[in-house]
Image (cartoon, rainbow, N blue to C red; front, side, top):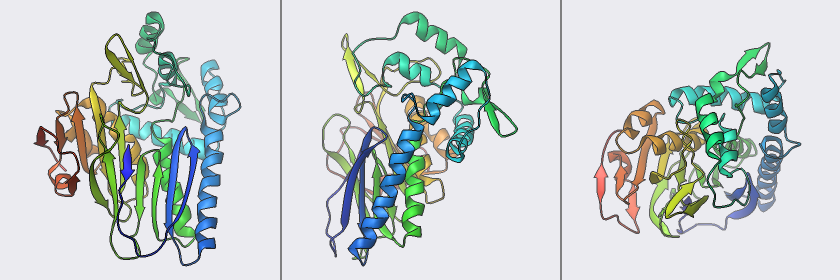
Length: 338
């Protein structure tokens, strides 16, 4: 998870924290009037709290839970504008990633136990896992009829945990700009976006955590509109029989066996920068160092960094030049583009 790196400041920022989408949210804002910053931050957090209740796949009274019941029974449903956007964006990004990212594998997430806030160190029931993998649930299985989604496979269950934080980051940015905030750093569960610069003219500086130590591995300056996201095997995981299993589940085979330690991606400024920073790290994680460059080009990333299972770091040339190392790796490979 990226970490906010300390740096000098020209004025006292307004800071507010919360806990949404099962993760920590940190807002750091600069404004001429403290009341303006407080109102803007409060509006963002209220929206995030509403979206959390609406999109929680495992809360029985959420919209996504109701959608999953409809999909399982083969019934069409009428989504809210937010859910419709997530479904359509999810279908687009699933296709772009060749299925290495899919919000349709909620049943696999539940089979591993990672749908709960606390989970046991246990493997899925073999028959259940094999059946879900054979069914290949994907958002591509949803067709639209008169604006209503209709599922084709009972195994298809929605879980937007791999994209909702980044999608919400884009909403938060638009909300702050509309409120007149032009200097801020937004962090939703390790997906970080910069608005403008700090009042002293310097860019925001953020860190990326070392996947095996609770400290920053490196830092980099984050420019206006850029978004940084990291997926790693150290956030939600358990160990069993000498092996580590994490919440990153490969849609191809249903495995959660942590083949890579972490992947960080840098998304260029744009309307969906936050969304891409959240989504793109997953297919790169499953593709591994040798295939990451091809997928990164599809997502038009500004750069990416991968820590493989042995702790070696793979990084793109442009991103390498922006890094300041706190814990330099023993093995560094500059590879691919961008």
